[in-house]
Image (tube, rainbow, N blue to C red; front, top):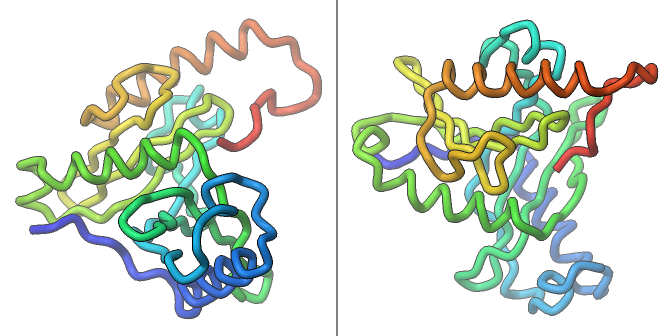
Length: 200
């Protein structure tokens, strides 16, 4: 069974495409691949919901049960090439907004990982829903393959715990992250903030 792409809320894909084409048509992208792409070639694909977990949750031993949905993310293609990602948020009234378009290492890593996991025996037997797990304080992004029976995680490169592109059981991944989080907290003086770096 193929990897399942969840259906985003009504209006989200149209909002993303509209902003993508408007920015491309006016040459307002600052990143090179999007700025140089032909407007008519740009499309969005591979919808997946983004979830995040805080550093305190990781330190306390929480797992995927603590993950909170925060946005929807797409891969942006120019012809057959993946060149960027598009991430949306929602206004207070639920109206979808295209928050940002991003190029860089996590875009290519997402595309490569999605291609790889499609061929995995576990995924072929599925069904698994494609999600993305993001832990900004530890610079971690991972594909999250979710099913009622099991969850699988695939850290994206670069990963603070290694294992890029490999299937990792949630218990193992969160154990590695908890050790790293505690070490980070012990080494970082309290400065009235959460100590986390910007969202990757």
